[in-house]
Length: 119
Image: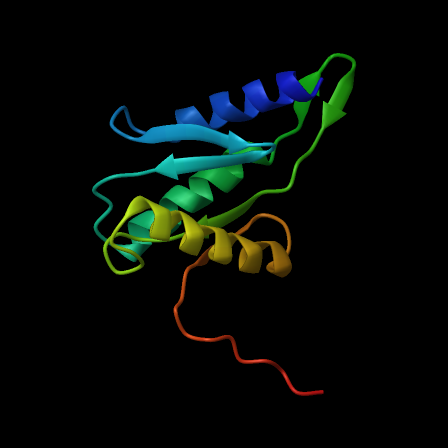
């Protein structure tokens, strides 16, 4: 059932991308999207919103109906890293922050240290 879910997720993700973009299953339930030529942060946000919306409807894997959570970590070239390894590390850090915010969200990488709320 897990493999069928991953196939359906990848199909929905692929429909959100252009032919020149790259979709890779990174492992487990994580995917990497390499999206080229997005020139503004608003175009990145639009893409994230399209991805989140595409994954919100229930997945049907007979006889089950499943819903999943979606978190997206974003690192932009070249400001967030000069090479793929650095970009992946920074996207993973942003993903961690997105997961802390809750379901169906995204977070841009920031080199600034987080400000902790005082109790």
